[in-house]
Structure formats: C-alpha cells, structure tokens
Image (cartoon, rainbow, N blue to C red; front, side):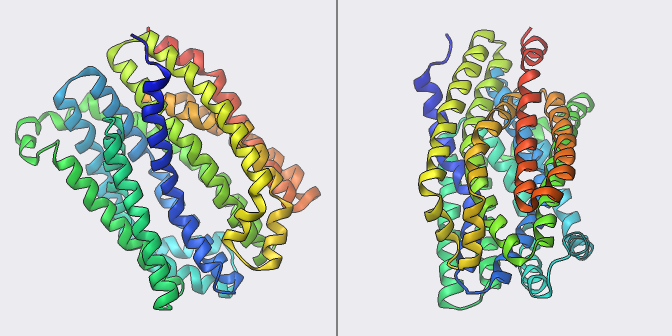
Length: 435
C-alpha cells in the first residue's frame, strides 16, 4: 500500500521542526554577538562558523549516508544491518575527529590565508575556533547518531535530541555573553557544551536499541569488504558533493570579506537566513530520504513514486511560503541579527535574492534527500560538480559588473543548476534502484 499524505506529514513536519534547530546554533551565535556593538565580532564568528562548516560539512556524509543505510535496514527488516548501519560510520567519524584535533593549528592558519580578514576579525575568529575545535570528535559522532536515529524513523527521539540541544545552546549563549560578559569566548563555550550534550544524549538513545554486547555476535561481519566498499563509494560521492558546496561557500565568504567588514557581516546575516530556508527544505528531504530508503529496502516501486509526487508538492508550497516570509518579514529578520545601521542597510538591499532562492534551490535540496535515501549518490556528485562550474562562470562575469549583487546572482545560478541537473537524473534513479 502506497504511503499517504498523513503518513508523510507525520514524519516530515517533526523533521522540519527538528532540522530547523540545527542552523539556530550559528544563527543564535550571530544574533548574540550582533548586539555587542562591533561588526568585527559578527565577522569573527562568521569566519569561525565557516571554518567549522568547512570541516563538518566536508564529512556531512556521516549523517546523510548513515540515514540512508539505516532507513534501508529498517525497510529490509534485517536486525544486524541496523547494527552495521551505525557502527561502521561511527568508527570513521571517531578517526576523522581525532585528526582534526591534531591538525588544528594548520587548519586555522590555512583559513586565515584564504579569507584574509581584518586584524580585529582575526582575533575574534581565533578565540571562537580554539575553543570549539575540541568538540570535533563529538560533533562527527553526533552526525552518525542523528543519521541513524532519523533513518529508524524515531521521530520523538529526533525532536528531543535537536530541540533540547539548541535550547541549551541559546540559554548558555545569553548567560555567558550578557551575564558573565565573556564575549565571543562565551558564544564558543556555549556551543561546545551543547555539542557535548547532543553527543551524549544521542549515544544513550541508540544504546537503548543497539547494546554494545551484540558486537560480539556481529563483530566479524562488521568489516565485510563488500559492505565497506559500498559504504565508502557512497561516502566518497557525498564528500565530493560537499567539497563543491564548500568551495562555492568559501569563495562567497572570501569575496564578501574583500568587499569590507560591513559587507562581510551583512552577507553573514543573509546567509544565516538562507541556512534557515535551506533547513526547511532539508527537513522535507530527510522525510523523503527515509521513505525512499524504506521503499528501496522493501523493493516497493509504488511507494517510491508516491514519495516523489508528495515531495514535489511540498517543494512548491514551501517555496511560496518562504518567499512570502522574506518579502513581508525580511526587515524584522535582519533587525533580529544586528542593530548596526550600516550592516542592516546593506543586508536589506540584498534581501530580494533570498526571495528567489526557494524557487531555484528547493528541488536540489529535496531531491538530494531522495537520492541519498536510495544511496544512489553518483548523480548527487555530478550535479554539484556541474553547479560549481556554472557558479564559476557567473562569478567571473557578474562580480566585476555588479559587486555584491553579482556575488548573490552567482549563488542563485549555483542553486538553480544544482536543482536542474539533479531533477534531470531522477528517471535514472528510478530505473537503476527500483527495477
């Protein structure tokens, strides 16, 4: 029996709510420092945030890939595959996190060489980075925790994990910055504590369903060569996809930094709003990923077609809602992030680009979830390579002519091309994965 709207929405709506809490970590940090009266604080946190986004998004496959394999194990109804879907990527996450700790100084030096921020911005960014880097292993393991929980359709657990984490972060942000007056360091410590809590809670929730003693039963099969090859193939495609996304993001931030501290701060605020919009779509994508993965695991073509149909309808409704939101409430959103008049004026002058973004980027964001839920990731990789190439052309032509508006135009071109290429690969997904 094909899934219906009620079943889909029962998963999608909680996922939207829980997923929206993720960018709040960065958004709250930006909003808090935006009230400290110095644009260099916003710029410093923006640079620090981009550094960690670069590190963590590069290995975002740890959540996305885990969610897809977890959903497929649920659809297939094979208990031991649920164990493998967690412990294989968890081992990779721990190793990568430890490498980040060892290489923290070269990472920070390299980031400053790329972005070339002002001296005041460097001081704030360095403070932020040197505190938060110690949470790297916990964050990456937390990605695996969240991906496995979402793939198992544990809706209440997902909501509890993400919402409680962000409530802790918000509360500690306010206490550390406005009560203890720790400035940027207070923002960093608040986020680090929230990240540690998220890891511990996620591990506890999974421990209720995957007792460690069962590794003695399945331990030898955990390192099955063919299964590991498939895992690494999917993860490599997703990693290349993320490299393309981060390349675009870092070019965007670096160019904004060259335009000056106020433009950097304004773009940081607009990007935070764009992240919020993207996470609306990501919540829908997570639901589509779970249902697509379950359909693949059960070899149910009818369910898969229904997932695609409902996803398309959700994209249209969500695009209209978000465009209306920015056109009507854009000024209020910007004011929430900062009271600096120069920064607000620049951000307001560019907000129309955010009204365009949902219509050109929605398909790419949601179909990404469908493809990853099916763990058919080659088109995801190829769509991002093509989108990055189009961004490079638009960037080269538009920025010299229109400055920061040209930069935002190049971002819109990137989002549109990602959607176009991924939509074009949809029929191949159905033929290859559900035949």
